[in-house]
Length: 51
Image (cartoon, rainbow, N blue to C red; front, side):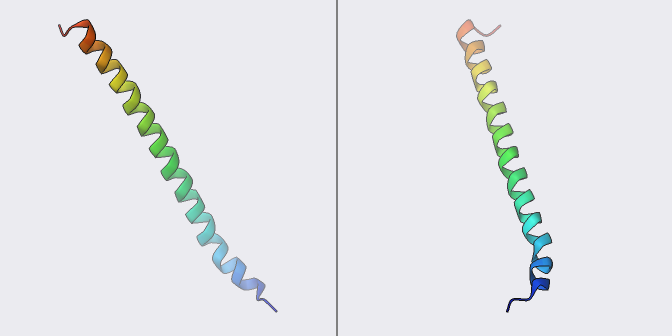
């Protein structure tokens, strides 16, 4: 009924899209975490008084 070759033709595309999605979300999370910690450090620096 269904051609099993069609699955193998689209499997690399699906795997690629899943990997790209994982990388994008991981990058977003890492950048967001870095900005959050930088803003906390900046706020502490401002509250202590700038040198």
